[in-house]
Length: 80
Image 1: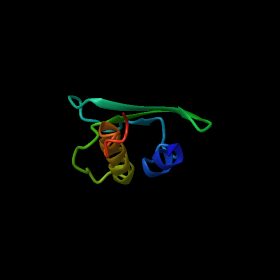
Image 2: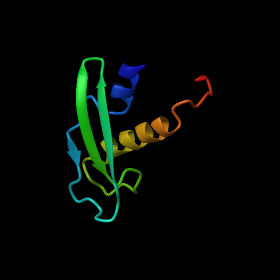
Image 3: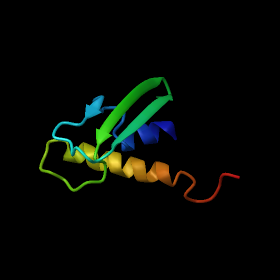
Image 4: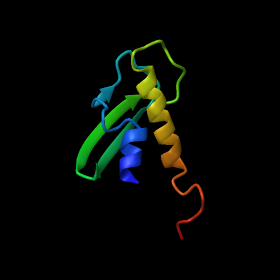
């Protein structure tokens, strides 16, 4: 399960910061992982904002999907 989050969410290959040309009044989203031998913190400004034509648009789309999944971690209601 952890490997899926790391690969699908783009965290494994991500840089530490995605704040270049950030939107000043948009919050940063901070992903922290310490599992499966990977320790990493990735900070992304303005997750979920419209693409800007930046080379980071694809990575930002992955981070958005990961953030949405983590917000609904128990999507099937299986955790008691």
